[in-house]
Length: 585
Image 1 (cartoon, rainbow, N blue to C red):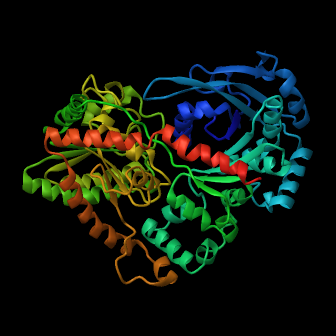
Image 2 (cartoon, rainbow, N blue to C red):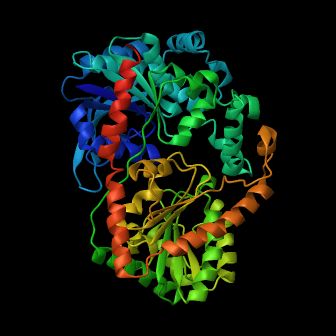
């Protein structure tokens, strides 16, 4: 059976999307039946306490010469590599849990500490990478992130090969994003028999800043990309030189891997847009999976009742509809689009005598606000229905979004927005006005609509997590999950997923030059026009009876089952591994 080596910055902690992918893949029964060993590779720093080094509770260090640990005789495997490169390894196991079933599995973890890395070996590595792949490390040596992942590449590769020397079956090094590429390129260079490489494109790092950083966002970029491709042009022909960015330098070289896994249809197009040689790379669609759970109508109604009671406790009314947006507070999530849709929906609600609330759960502060600070803000000025600028309340981008919320709430009549800038969703995290029996899953189970109209979203697991709980998932057409939904439903339009198209230009834009000059004013006009259409479609789809809600629940569960991690593993991931092996003959 096969061994898969996942090189990632989330080897020890779930930080974001890659961690969610690892959770889903590794706990999938289909994955476990096909993959004998999973080894996660990442960096570590001296000074990290042993009990914190592997992250999750239940982790176990089996080897660390720095700490005098050698459970199982691993010293004979790792010590020769440590001495050759002058590095330190930490090796052990870390549990992964299926959030739906509670089942756990253990994966191996190999961490590399490189502060004492042999300067001569590292200089030779950089020289060979330039000769073989054209990567000019001298241009990026001022980037600590680049240096970190380059430095672990050779010792990590040699350690894995020593660990698996007696195993049967292929070994595949998977580079999760640009971070894993140096290790994958080391494997490419060694060209060992039955050793393969894949670049797992959770995004295309070259593209993201062009979408996020330009006021035209997705409206401009995807039209420019599509128009350029029709004329046989690539990103540098349209947007200039990209090689000052080390992330571009690394992911462009993924063309040397045996496979490129793309998490969405747009990611395939984005990678092919990098260059003619990237367009010829062996790219496979490997969507992300989403959780699927069976709940009853009564359970959904109970969760919704808790969410509605929270609104009553804060704002003095019980909403007919509860909307949610659980997300990171970053530009790419397009939070302003939520408010634009709600501006139109508010008028429809007001005319019909209906009411709603949108909970936006998002924060810049990863661990969240301390519980005592939350209780103090709640008692003093009514947080989170009201906010004040400055820590422990609003910081950074939270301030800008809150100001937009204040403007919306001042003008709306039937729908109000509550911005909960906290990490977590329970009374101890969010204050005494939250129902005592509230738990995080209530914001998933009880939601009528999950908003998620991102400007850049390679897949978007969070946007469709509430699908199996009967929510309408409102996403933008650039979200990778839109393509998976279309496949899971055989292209049939379903009421559970509403796709907003903010790349629809209408008429008046022609040629590459015309679309590349789309800016804020053009995107703003398109968003305003399209948001009205989205609001009308959403109003028509919202269930108003128990029977309609139950139908949404049943259909959403069916769609989610067709997008599970077992489906992803069997239909996309494992065939992708097979194609990687076939590409080498």
